[in-house]
Image 1 (tube, helix red, strand yellow):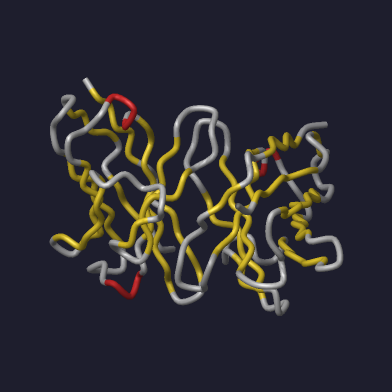
Image 2 (cartoon, chains in turn blue, red):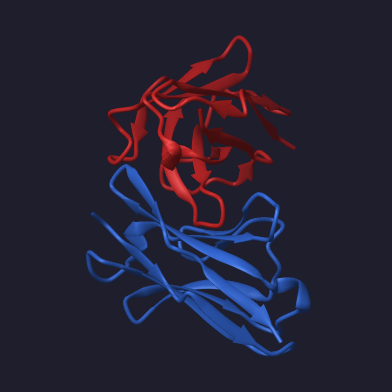
Length: 109
Length: 118
């Protein structure tokens, strides 16, 4: 069974920079896994942020960026704002099947 | 802007069938891929499957034997059926639009909680 792994939790100071990563149990994550990133706040539906590694939706803040880093998919938040505190999920494509990561709880403190 | 709304029973008995419908407004269902995702209380997201407007579909292997996703283009709706449910199927169920086979979902419904209990 394929497992997608994210950091369970991260803490960042307001104005700081943080990178969340997404690893695959099958090996290095490449663009062929079409990594997606979502943000979810308590009681709300997930909101799409990034698709196909680094592409932003029209509503995605410019301070967020997606990339591949050291064999993993990565989401970097720069100039972190208090409203960035949320759970972040990555999503990877495995030839017709999608698998979510377990999520990273980002605390802004 | 496209909007999605889930509807269906909030309580299902064990061993019975869970049925949900997603109504799409602000755009035609006769294009794109249409997905279901669920989230057990306090846990992470799980991809259930998708259907293309042509009718082709793909499912999570762990649920494949119990899941069917279908389309009703005349009503601009798509549906989820999950058979033989247990307490482990208790979750918030989301419907979502997926622009291409290689992109994740962009627009999501607000979600609906389905509890499996006798």
